[in-house]
Length: 58
Image (tube, rainbow, N blue to C red; front, side, top):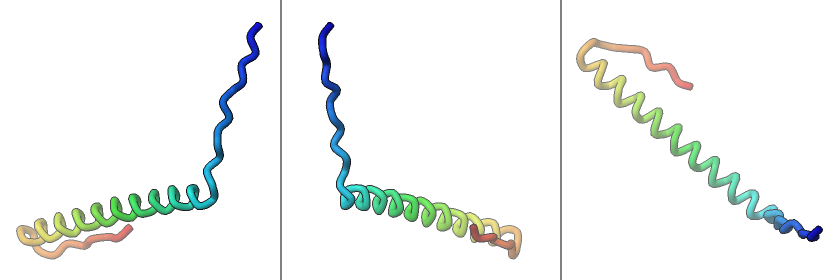
């Protein structure tokens, strides 16, 4: 039987982990801003034809 050594995974450094987490937060923030901008633009278009409407925040 052949002995195989499993490749060892190098754990990311705390700095790499932080940078990855920070990038995820930035991406989520940009997505939320896009959603809110789209919601506002949609509300403005609807308001032009139907009068005032209420826009609820998340």
